[in-house]
Length: 375
Image 1 (spheres, helix red, strand yellow):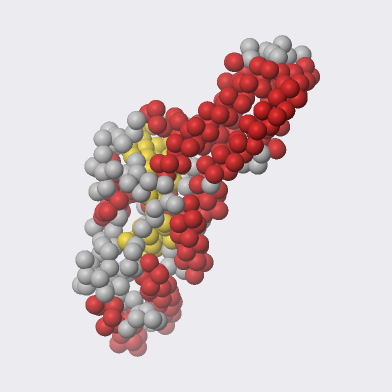
Image 2 (cartoon, one colour):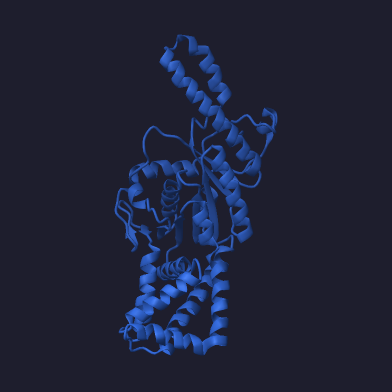
């Protein structure tokens, strides 16, 4: 649709902005893409990722039979957003019949891994298993998180949700999460090579760890159980990796605010996603002051009425205008960078917190009913 970006841009004249054809400034393309199974929502810390994730999940639930929102951020916020307590098991969101939330903990998944291995080895060599698992996680950095993610994905696939929305941690942690398939594939390949080359030594080490605590299981049992679990994890990760690189199944929604550091972080994120082969063609800009207004229009109003305002009101309006001009500058840069190939959605700054189901429902409409910038 033909839109104007409502911002003064350093590289485009106003006339050029009026004539440019831009993708629709909404997430309707994501919500209406029925083939999507995985939707990641990420960006810099403090830009409104959780609110955006909840809104995407709500809109998805209006079209899909069963939708799950998962928080992979160690500092979970889904419970705060919906004003409802969630845990590592999917829970139905109040007011919905088909929208679920869960908050995961990597430590819980590693504890589950240890219990599974103990089950295979007889359950009476707890000290040996915990020591061997600790050795594994300390010598292959990130493998604990990767295996936790694998367990999560296996669990989610068994639940048969139509769509899963990931409320991710800040950018650095998210990129680490997305690199798990590659990291784990390389790490497990090395582990399997070591097994083939030094199988006897590994078995002796497993027996030694078990013997430290008087365990009855053999080194062979313990090593085979652990490596069997790693092999299973690699299979899951490979399957997930293939799905994540399929643009018909997976997309990444980048969230930012109209400030320099956030826009810069978004550019870094977009480039990294491209390296991973993950589709990304949507950017949500949160906390936008009067997105339907132009800074010049507001400036003209302010100059015309400034003399009639009290000094305190002049100061307040002056700061608001300075913030509006700054925001418009960075929104313009965002359209410069991404306007041709990205759906850039502007979400308004409100005078209240978006918490609770009803407020989230109302706010989510801004994702699919874009503000008309031509008005």
